[in-house]
Length: 179
Image (cartoon, rainbow, N blue to C red):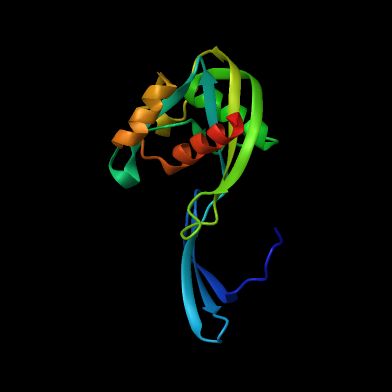
């Protein structure tokens, strides 16, 4: 697959809002027919998501997610300062769950919400797990952790109890990796 030239040309760009975690940009654009347009989006750094697999099941975390106004189950994920994406994945896994992985393998990169943000996610499979003590950030103080068998994980997706699109997409990568 080759990278195509942009169909929509950026004419100008300005920051509408910025904080330590994100920047909201608004770009003036020009479409292929020359007509003007505008595109607003959120610029955020990429993040890692870790699929901690053990005994035909997965370790999940649950926390209150402010934008949706409720608690949500997901695979451990986030951004942590580290030298490499793999180191970042190891650090996120340890911080959120206390788990260390003997093996970490890259499963793939995906776009998070390609119509809304430039953010991507890097998915890793963690195996050979050893439980330790979590070292959560203050914003994660309400986080819970639990192991679920694969059959229950699928049931939670089907019932709408797991709605995190990144975790569901990562599970698809995990399924494809299994062949």
